[in-house]
Length: 219
Picture 1 (cartoon, rainbow, N blue to C red):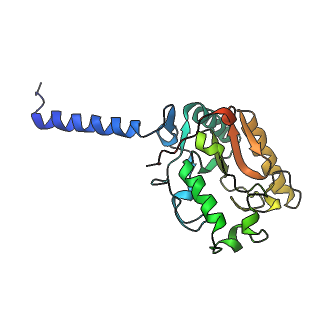
Picture 2 (cartoon, helix red, strand yellow; picture 1 turned 90 degrees about the vertical axis):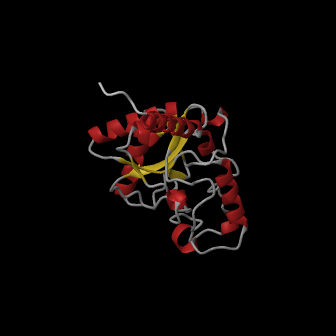
Picture 3 (cartoon, helix red, strand yellow; picture 1 turned 45 degrees about the vertical axis):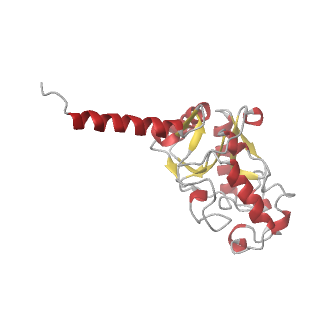
């Protein structure tokens, strides 16, 4: 057997340190969903410009879904059941650093309305807090909430569309969209996720209300 060279040992040690550093970057008890379920599609909107602010949001250095491990495992179970029924999830947001929530607040108070036509055509930007579309605290910051949809399904409105038509029980969308919302909500609830009535895409896992929040940057 050929013995390891000094270069091999140094390289292995370096790789180990890198792995440890990467693992340490997550809040305690969190996982990268891609490490457990790379098959779940991620379209992490706040890491890029395709969101209601029109630019990447502070706190999102990488387009990665981080979740607390219990929520991640429950979501994997949702995906498994969805696939057995012939469809697949698509994720838009998971853990959200507190600095991102603060950035949303700053955005809502600022003059930029470049994304109004796409995301809130019928709402006054400064009313988004009172209307419940943006919160000063978010369950996402606990790692126990997700924003998601289903690949290829019509839900009546896009993700993050601030309008009453996005309310889960709204009847001003097609019967097909209403049925899709009902099916997604039923499936998520069966695995411990609870829907926010004003956003068909938002689900918080059991215990999110009492969990600590974090401000560690996603990278």
